[in-house]
Amino acid sequence: MDFCCQDKYGFIEAALDQRIKNRRLRRLRDVTPLNSPEIKASGRTMINFCSNDYLGLARHPRLQERAIEFIRQYGAGATASRLICGNYDFYRKIETKLARLKKTPAALVLATGFQANISAIPALADQNSLIFSDALNHNSLIQACRLARCRVKVYRHNDLTHLSQLLEQPLDNHVSRIFIVTESVFSMDGDVADLAGIVHLAKQYNAFLIVDDAHATGVFGSKGMGLSCGHDIDLVIGTFGKAGGAFGAYFACAENLKHYMVNFCAGLIYSTALPPAVMGAVDGALEIIPEMDEERRLLQKNAQYLRQCLHDQGWETGNSATQIVPVLIGKAQDALDLSGFLEENGILITAIRPPTVPEGASRIRISLSVSHARHHIDRLVELMEKWQRRK
Image (tube, rainbow, N blue to C red; front, side, top):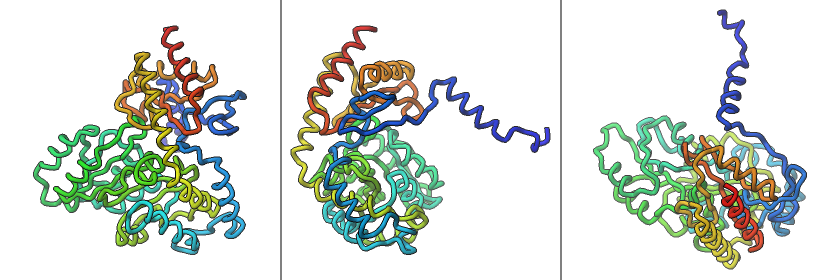
């Protein structure tokens, strides 16, 4: 058949049909925030257990006020990339503040966590590099490793013995540099990496260590600055769009690495800078987060309470030790059914299915916020028990 006569959209329909057949089709859902943690979805008020707004800052008055201040002073947009004319003076001030809090020599702000990850690793690695990546790293890190176009060895999740065994293997003479890539808090499992052990291995084998601290920023560490804080890590990547309640991402690193990224990180070089309103909100968040130790303690206390209640009912939450509490279901349809039941009863928790998680590891992912009162959690626990009884 002449190619010109083929249906050029055929592959799109085929791919969507396959997703429908496998019950993996995703659709965007309209929601309206009401108050933390309530939203309106499908015309009903629901308790939101999906949000990453761990500290409840997304609607905090100081973030809103600072965003308004910045937009009045600087306008609505940054107008260009930071290397052209979008590097307004507030970037330097906020990066200096962030570096001080992160206990690193320098920091660099970028647009999104996904952009930061997929830009950083290809900027640092060449085709002769060798990357050791945790098996359960976020998709953005997986995509980044692929974009680096070098060899990647995946080590078993949180298994430092396996990582050590891989590092001990003789290197090809052509290997130019070695990287270890991990999250600190794993986004789908809520467990925590042994950063002290990984740092030790990185030093032992002269590996460049990259840690995605996104789900720990604001929640753990000194002044809420993440689990990476105080560790000797070459590049820390984090976001302001989770516990920070705003938007954007950052690198925390050495001064010369910051200069390197300004020159080689495509996500920074070729992207319009974050708008002033967003940076105003970030500035406000960086003032508030260090003062929220009590909220951090409450968040972890509630997470432990929820895990214990779920365990008492016979649910499996894996190795979760954070505000992210997965309920491991197994089959995708079962996870969808449970999510649907909860939604019918006023609770929004999305089913997580392949390809986001491995086959047979579908789950609902409960994301706790300090905005959740104990009665919100008790309502969820009550419904989880009700679901168990009806099966």
